Length: 470
Image (cartoon, rainbow, N blue to C red):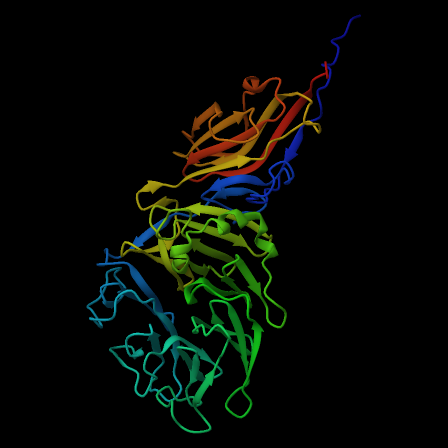
C-alpha cells in the first residue's frame, strides 16, 4: 500500500489572535500582532482589531473654526467659534440664539464649572484676550473683578485659578468674584531663566499643575498660608493647554519631545509612546501648538498636524489599559475635544461639531486599513512560501474587505489583491480563505487588510512552507 508523502517544509499553522496596535520601530523586530501602519482602526474590542467609531455632525455648521467647547453641569454643550460667537446646543439638536458675540478671534478657550458664592453653578470661560466670562444658566456676562488677561481657567479646591503672563492668580476661597482680598486671594509668580510665559494650567490630584513651553511646576496647598510652588522640570513643558488632559488620574500632554505621561512627583515619562514616535517626530513644528488632547474616559486621543498639514490631520489613540496605539485619519480636523452626557465630542477647523458614535462619518462609511510586519523564515537569506492563509472576521452587511499580499519587506507599490469581499449578509466569526499563490519563493511576506465600514478581525492564520536552501 502506498501513501502520499508529506510535503517537505510545511509547518503547523501560526495564529495571531492578539493585535497590539501600531509600532513604527524596526519592522523586522516588532511582534507578529503589531502593524507597521494603520488607518482608522481601534483597540476598543481588544484583543481584536476593529474599525473606529463613526462621527455624527451636531447642529448646523458654524461660521468659523471651533475655539472652545464648554459643558455646563453636563446639561448643556456650549461652543465658541473663531468669529467670536458663543452659542449652546438645544435639545432639538440645533444651535440656540447667540449668547455672546464680538469675542476675540484666534484664541482657544478653556472652561470649568464653579459655584462658590454664586447663586447657581456657572460655566466659567477664559481665552487670555477677552474678560473672563461666566454663564449662569441664562446669560453670559463678565466675571466681576477677574484678572485682566486671565487665561487657562481652572477650578481646584473651591478656588478659581488662571494665568496672566508668568503669574498664577487665585480667587478667594469659594468666591468666584473676589481676586483681591489680602491673605485669601492673590498671585504666585512662576519664574524660569528663559522668561517663558505660562501656557497651561491643569488641576491634578491634590495639586495644580502649571505649564510653560519648557517647564512644569506643581502648586501644592489650599491657600496663601501654605502654598508651595515646586519646580518639576525646566526642560520639559507643554506645547499648549489644549494638548493636555487627565485620563484616570494620570496627566498626558504633548511636549516638544513627544507625548508625556505624568502622575506627579517623578519626572514625566515618554517611553510608552516609542511605538508611534515617528508621528511625533514628524509633527508640523509651525503648527504644533494646534495639537489637542481628549479622552472618552478610558483612552487618550491626541490630534496632531502631521508633515505639511496646517491643522491636526491625524489622531493618535492610546489604550491606557492594554498599552496599544492606533492611528486615525479624519476628513475634518479636530481643534478641541470634550465630553458631554457620556459621549465624546470634538470641534473642527471648519466650524463643525461632531459626536463619536455609529458606523458612518457623516454619510460615508469609514475607510480603514492595517499593514502587517514582514514575516520571514528566521534567516534573511532563506526563502519561503505561504502555503495557506485564513481570516476570522465579523463583517456586517454592506461592509467591504480587501486582502493584499506583498513579497517586499517595505513600500506601498508591490501589493497584489488576493481577496475582495462585500458582505451581502452579516458575516460573524467566519473563516475566509485567502489565496496565497502570488507570493511563492519570497524572503519576506506582508499582508494588508483594508475596507470600508465596520470590520472586526479576530484572527489571522498563516501556514508556511520553508523552502530548501538550494
